[in-house]
Length: 469
Image (cartoon, rainbow, N blue to C red):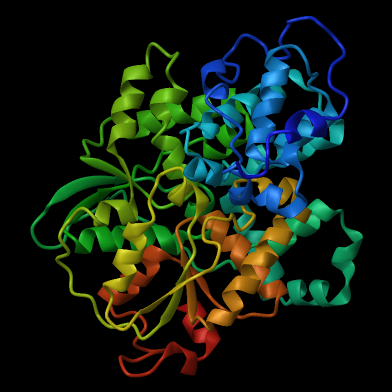
């Protein structure tokens, strides 16, 4: 039995001194007892857990956190700062679910617990303000769009280079430094039209979830997704009024806001008449696939949510189910593939992205060690837990460096930002792109200017390759 069983009770500091059975949770969807009881504390989750790897602390492992949930549910632990800290440091990466032989649905437990925390635990005024700023900005494409202007000026004027070299960033609070380090390069925006016609014979009509950060900071990913789908015979519908899907809020325990965004997302696609809804952000994809559970109490949306969720597919998952019809042009590239956690663990999608990349002529697909371990992005985690996130990012960068990859491919905007930041800290100039961008480059021969079928991208300039995406 890996890790033993004696740890949880010994590791818990200051349990509640009471014989009362009053739960620390309120009555609204506490973490389900039947799921908590599924955990047999076998310890198989320990080596799969990033925070347990970092600190070797039982209470910062999945089984330790489940034990804390049980204590709180039984009225034997208070929802105090120490108890809450163990859930704040959880990445919610769901690696433990892949490792668990008992099938414990940890995702439902951590999301329910975080919602309880946000309702029943009083955070400090500064912490509340910081989180309010995050949730008032990142789920709002209109506000992110406005941010593009000052960020573009900051980058293109050379101010960013001066600030970073001068050491001025050291004067900022740690979390603001984390925000600056994760800032994406602002590139020209490729707006996806509301309807993109299928090329050749129409095979399907699909909706495209545009996302928030993806839409404004990685618009080329959405544009590439629409082009690839069209090239494969799909008519693509991208409603302009679609909001945030609510993923960031769900994963952080902000339940009321998440429910509101989920309803609006369903409404935005209500009259699109699509066969499938395509996602290209792992966190968003796992969230919309769970709308049936999220809106289970809503008499007006429960049935609609189940229908909506059943139509949702990740772009790589969907392309893996249809016969390719568009010609793949060669890309002479060494590509290291990074598994986004909410793609591999929450959606169980691992093979499809690799198969799509391997089918492109000329690509040499490279595997990164410890693929199940999170890079440290995890929704807002790298903004609220920057030290742990940076350590995990640096660990991932160290594993990537020896591969001598021309480019890193992944399936989530948060991972793109996190890997770019970690690689830059380590001094590695390796472009990080979405998997679909490489497929787009192959279908439309977009890298011919920087590489040829007989010349590796390593001989081309990094700037040329990076700007191609």
